Length: 330
Image 1 (tube, helix red, strand yellow):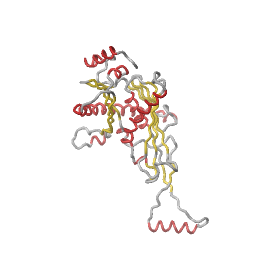
Image 2 (cartoon, helix red, strand yellow):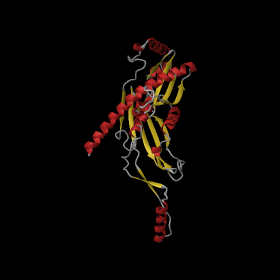
Image 3 (spheres, rainbow, N blue to C red):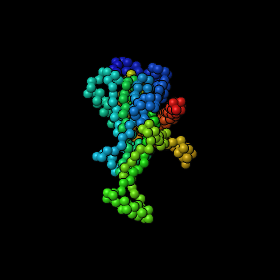
Image 4 (cartoon, rainbow, N blue to C red):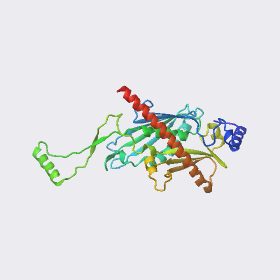
């Protein structure tokens, strides 16, 4: 989106004048309406999926589990891996060429991948066979339209897809070799194992569940969240539309996760458990003094916590809808 310099100046003056002078009447710390849908209706073939719309910025995210192959680099690793791919559609950026679209997709992929890798993995839940095999989480997100604040929309959709994710239960398989037809030799081996109480480690696995069944991620409430602070000295504001992004191009993107309510309730000081900062990304041509960075991180943590609580409530509502539909079908 390209707007004139006079319009940019008018928008900046309006933002600096106070909360009531934003074009849509929002306060500086208010989001546009967030629409969130999670479950199989979004991407039926995925293990978890979600669709998000924030004021016209629409994103679909899907998570697909992939087991290790014979030459996979995940062999021998515990805790799983995560692979992230962001794709920007031509309809979201009709003024960009194919090479520019690829560059935008690559930039978004790099930003989100670094934050997800540090906050999701390693996880014991993603280990299939200890020290041998683990799940690969393929996270794919498609930007359908961009009306501003696309990074927050992307992370909310990915968070919804991870919330919806079901990890199939697996059962380890052990193999013992013997000479063909040597039944007595096999019996002697098993007697020796039982007598000495040896443990035969699993070397492969089989699924106990159907593809649509499984367990959700442990501590889904503490999945990471992104919050973008649009900086216009001396203020900042949240959830910028395209015109506001064009007028105030400097943004500080913070990636947080927060402990689940049960852990937060046990916080020793009696206050609110602090969040974990997984990453910081500064976008735009401007500079940010260190003396201003720490207060902005503190404010960002507060807004990220509020957004996290609201999203968890919305996702629990989506869970209730899915469970009700499943009960009716059965």
